[in-house]
Length: 596
Image (cartoon, helix red, strand yellow):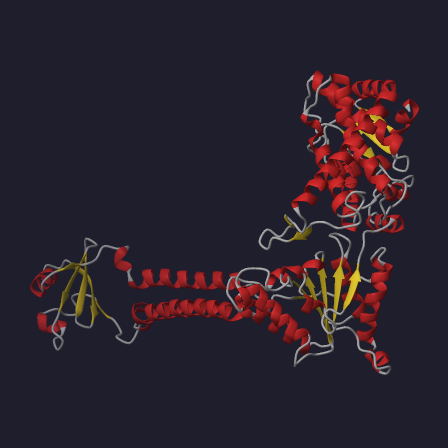
């Protein structure tokens, strides 16, 4: 049975208090009783002769007498004299003589030994605290890597989708289990495997599955835990981590968010003395240097492979790259089934429909959708999760929560209705493969209203016509406002931002401009300290820049003209849909189809 350190402290404290109280009662009784009155020896003898003495107590040379009135007096005799020398006889007055050997320990203990014990305990406590601080200082360069708990194992079967990635990683597991199978053919397993993919696709989950499948020691750490404000600490922690791994080999090390320390060297201030670069140098040496262990496999995850140092990606280090992409419709349905497994889902719920309506979402997003649906069901005091709860949770995750408390004036509500009706009419006519699912003038997030379209299938390629249709739909709200009210509002600002970006990307990145041709213009550069692609390197002349602006303006103008013609031809439908929105606030896909 383990003893709690707090219990030990309480026991020691109680003992010290008990001893102090005992000392007070045994040694310092004068604090609680009136001390005897000190008199001269002559006055003491006079009291004896007057027969006022009830009892005499003799303690070495100290003589204490209790008078008949219950008071006490005290005097001292000579060391060699007796009471008989002063005419005091035992037969006249009772005399008690105290044994000099009795009761000498406790006064000595409390007056001499106890103070030294308390002082020693205090010094011991101070030294122990200092020793703890020294231990922390000495462990400052130790790795904070955590050894995975293999009790609650995550296996590959628990990870939905990602079949190709699991196959790549299963080879790593097989090597750890049966290394002789590979060595007999002269095959060498990669020393490092880099998991690349957007946030939320399951990079960390796959690493946990590798740990569960392999059944070997699995150390996990975030790359940011290596870097400290003191130079050299990160490199020391890297050395300590690999030493631990070699002692437990065969083993797997998982480093999450590798781009925190693996960025290209020489891109920031500080040169080779930069703490992050020293940490990276140490990782490079440990993975493929003079003293490496082939039985230590490093898994790393990042969503920014473009910023990693080339030395980190060369063969012998992270020489295998496993790309994890966003799940397709089949994989999304599998992921939804995994997250809905332990939740009370109604039998009528069709997760395939939910998977169809969530293109471009990651596994983490889908998990959040199922969780939000459970929260919505609990808020309504339901026992099960329904299809409507899942649909509502999709809207909440993608568009933000409803803000019914935001009250619009009658005029603003009317403008918003025509704005969203314009989006819906143009979107329905130009993008038949992305049917409009819902139109609403109820505020969500920062938007006063929204038009929600759901594609029929996942698309990996976008054509020039698709981009032009997107721009036309984005401009439809602004055009509808101008047609109906003869003026423009700020409601289309976000639409203009998106349309301008699409048009500029068509010209500069995708080569969809006849004037510019198939050329990529503008090279993105990363600002080191801000960490986002905010800067753009201008690798073209001012003349080309002018042509780019003209082309962007032309694409936007053509899309606006196209949108205006469409809405003029379908003005009656625009009016009807806007009025229906003002009446019901939300219009479904079926109601829109009736109007169209």
